[in-house]
Image 1 (cartoon, rainbow over the protein chains, first blue to last red):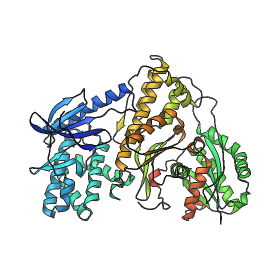
Image 2: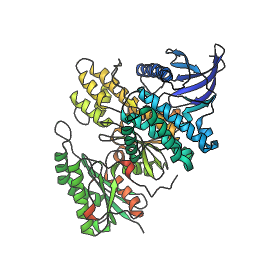
Image 3: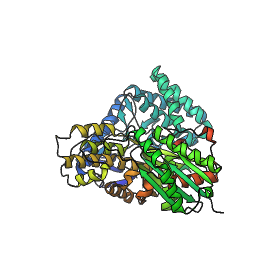
Image 4: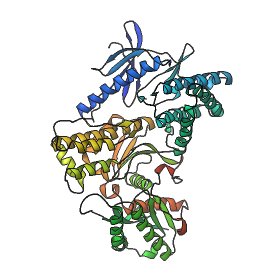
Length: 215
Length: 330
């Protein structure tokens, strides 16, 4: 496509900003890996592209704001989706007052609850993967997501969220996390208990730590 | 003054004794590997091999190092993770030596030792480590005082998966090089379960399916497909960890590190991320006593020793449980 501007280069895919049918869009393109067998490489890219597109639109049906999928192109293993201007939640947190923070994290808790209740896990819940636009919280990047009601997978989702909160806003992290749990329980009800128990276990394992980015 | 540390390794099928100095010189590194007459490693039989060979291995290590037992300043023992009977044999021997020469016993985690000897040899200060063997499949990097696990197998180890498949094909031990030779002649790719969950891999379903396909498909094609799938999964989580941690070098170690095919794949991952690629040489990548001795020295320097009466073996001692005080905090 013309006028593609690279906005992010991940381990698996590249993100470009562009226009498509007069709309501002993001193109997520999974690149071929030279180290993989070509048949296997093709299969993985096609499979994941279609899975991610499905997750994005199914999450939307559950009431979780996500980019609108305009086009899934399995030949080029790319998804064209609506551009969400942002900013990422990560940038907003330090500017939040306590009241607004509480409101925001209760809402995030609700949204994660809606995903989990609907049988979806995100797989990479960090504050960089949530964008705020028009007072709505958009979840992006379902590249590690899956359809599952597995307690471990749900627990990892919540644990990652907690780690992300702690790394950004240490002073009020307990408060933010508690707000998150209020929203999560509102949707998940009693189902939340086993998952939150698992979160404590996962935390004890001490392996899902942030990388050295914040050193 | 130079310090001499002896290291005893006996977590699985290798009994090893190594002697290092505080300067990082490896004076000796002697080992004896248990080879099962058929089938896999039976823990009890491996431990009997260890007790039979221990004396000659230790004697030879001392001879090659040209020192006497009484020159040793500390005895490092690999207390886990590993096979219970094998660990107990090694621990009993190490305790006896420590008591005999009246020097401290130093507890060493086997996985930490693989990383530390790799750092010593390659002179890489802070690499991402890919540790693959018959018993472990771990992607680890140092962060906040410990070697954190960024990815690992959810069930069986990579080496175990390949060894068992090789045995089912009737290939004698060690199976992986023979499997790779077959794979070189493979032409058609057969789809097998490719299981990556977030940062982790799972090899048990892949193995089961590959075994089921024996006889249905050409062995060369099947071997090639198994290796491509298994190594591809590892490469993917390695790449993700490399991108996430932003480390500038990668260290490949463990018994499976000698696979040229795997080396080629991971090297290409490194090139894409402009990271330096290192493979630990086979005599130090496979289980050995020198790595236990060297890590023992690092611990000894920090006064980490263990009284004989509480030197229990730990079959499931995780890498990320161990504090690493000898490394600067990043």
